[in-house]
Length: 115
Length: 111
Picture 1 (tube, rainbow over the protein chains, first blue to last red):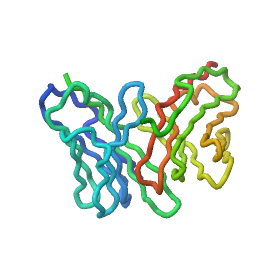
Picture 2: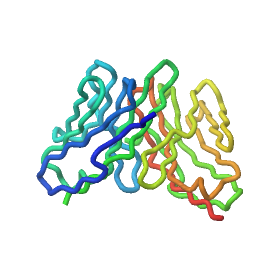
Picture 3: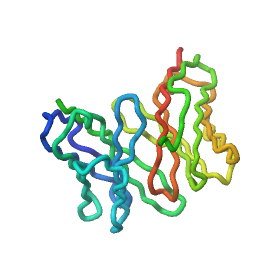
Picture 4: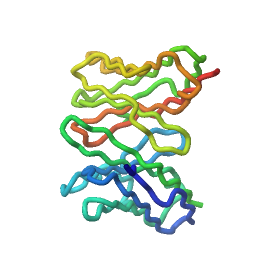
């Protein structure tokens, strides 16, 4: 079946512009995660959605970052007034969160470059 | 504060050798410890995972050793192959909520 997809695969923007990154999780997966991966760094947790519960936004680095998940499926990560330090690969993952199963399936990521 | 510390940052191993990557954590509430493999331009993919009620888990050439008292866990890749060359991340989570990742280990297996 289809895996997690993300779009665009690459995004180049100018400092100060807003960007939207999209994630299509695996059908039926109730949990969705956003991470940021900077060059040579590990994955930095940003936000987590689980079913209809309020999202865990504790990893968002500033109020310029926000995310939505519509209808329990597609998610959009929005970065307002982008800064050069926002340049990174943004990864989305989904999981079923069934009892005893915590496997996250990652998308290929969106590489964001802020000039 | 880094919740999960990973070492080494990079590793070079001869084909057929054993690759060993180590991770340490502080939070004793973590109950799930996965390892991910990432190839350039791809997202991470789950390789193997362990829960703290066992000390070792083996899947093919990949083994996780878990030391609960020391709060450490490691990945062993036996008979390392050039195709294993990738970046490996350890992680830890509580009840599958927030996942904390190590900073990654770049493995190069020399033919």
